[in-house]
View 1 (cartoon, helix red, strand yellow):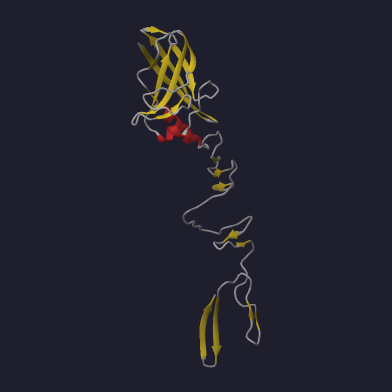
View 2 (view 1 turned 135 degrees about the vertical axis):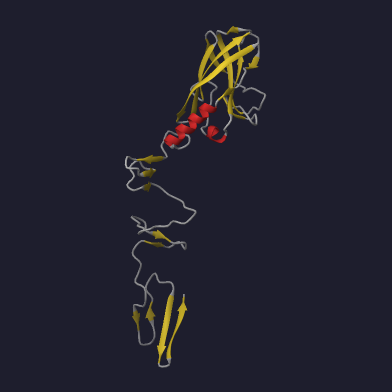
Length: 248
């Protein structure tokens, strides 16, 4: 008979995912175990019983255990491990998205003492709600780029926000491309420092708008349209009065 008492001490980020510091106590037939034991770990959605992460990355489903074990030294029943640390054999990183997508997670642990007692699931499962909240809090504080340590947003001492830069020069400074699916309303001038303005037809305006209207008119009725003018409004006057017409 196997029993365990497990706790999650802390949560942290690394460049390739989240880390969960885990410590537990395991007993075999009422006696605290000492020796090298084989452990398997899985993060489980408590509502659906689906595995969202396994220590070895194996695509197993409940009630099966992950395939490859993590060998840990157990002293007087006590073991500890950093879950998600790929430096440990048969341990895969924990994607941070796991904690953002799933609100009700538990850690499930299996243990084999290697002495012929077989592989058993330790009970009870460990509630990792606090760890998930810690991951949420860290992510909210850092606003990191998923899967890295890079900050996605920087706020300087004056409250200016930089995206792609740590030295914002305006209330919002974006160093890179930005896509907007809605309207942009400016209560002031819109300035292009480089590259000009691109219109829906693909044309790019890099200088000021050309003078509107007619630059020249000859006696034969010929006139020159300034570059950049696509629509004309023509008003004709004669002895009998005047009239207007438009053209494009």
